[in-house]
Amino acid sequence: MPPKGLISPSCIYACTRFRVRRTTLLPRDEYLRIMRMSIPEVVAHLGQREYGQELMDLAHDFAGAQLIEEAVNRNLAQSFQHAIAIAPGDLQTLTGEYLNRWDIANIMAILRGTVHDIPRQQIRDLLIPAGEVDSALLDRLLGFTTCNEVVEALQGWRLYPVLAEYYRTCGEQGIFARIENELYRQYYAGLLNPGTFGCSGCQELIAYLRFEIDITNMRNLIRLHCAEEACDLTVIDQTMIPGGRIPIAFFQRLYGIETEGEFVNAFLQTDIVPVLAQAMRELRQDPGFSSVDAAELVWQRWHQHRRPIHEVEIAVTRIRLHHLESLSRRHPFSVLPVLAYLERKKYEVFNLRAIARGKAFDLPPERIWQYIVL
Image 1 (tube, helix red, strand yellow):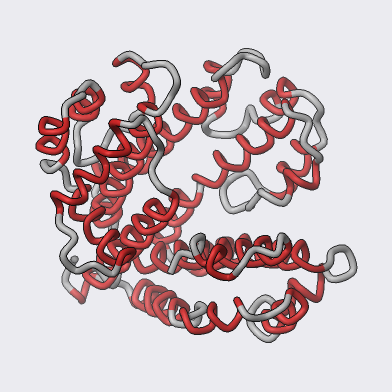
Image 2 (spheres, rainbow, N blue to C red):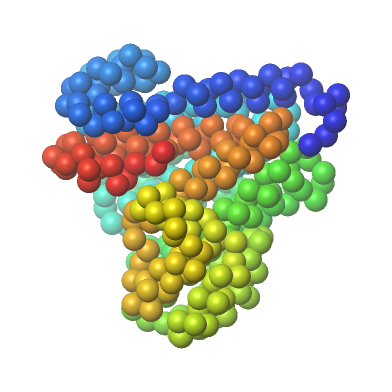
């Protein structure tokens, strides 16, 4: 962190505002109360918080669980846009660059929805206009009936060259997965690059991004291993995101390991193991769960070609958020306090959506709780 005298007052003010905003998010006890409410009671309760205006604006068009989902989604998009508006200088630049990941999620949702003929409103419910592709363009994309039209309308988007290079036909098997992989590879490459120019706050952001990339790569590797057909090293290389602390060559080597001892020994060398061990200690409330236990747990799923348990992925997400918040406290006047708030805000909205959807399907509270990230 630079000497205090070199930090602008506007940066100190903005970072302080985001730390304060972090304290306004729903605490665990409030989630537990909401779990016991009916959907109308949830609507009334959220109406007394910062979601009130969105609920009021949308009440004429939606009701019940869908009203909750629409309102919290709109509130999330507005929170992202407001964050960019109030962040000064480099903080604004880095926040905007970070939020551009939503462009990829939105565009891929539209492409997949178009090819599978999903109702437009159902696709729209998934969209969060937080990046460069604004609400007006997203609405325009939703008006098209073919993927060719969607892709052509995105010529002004910075990652359009990836679409132009990889896109062929909607019906080609696996094409969307390859496009999505390359879009995220290019996205992270762009985020990691500013650090070479000495941008204030870039190094702190890169430290977190490398951690995030490692977790994403490990998750993707396990999912590749679960596929019905084995893939070669070329596919692994194209799927893994460069720039993490763990080299891609390590993931390629790990993919080919088929003996428990070799796998556990290799996996123990990664920085992912302590994260997984901590996540499992919290999930199982078992303080004795060790790094070796974590490596053996992954091996069991790996050997059986099975995906990670959903609850474990949620637990790892919690630890990732804790890590981001820890970094934000270590670097209080960097972009990290901004991102720590925005990530927590995102999961608050995801949690409320999960609760609304779960209640709509009469799921028991303990089942819904499995999807909550705190």
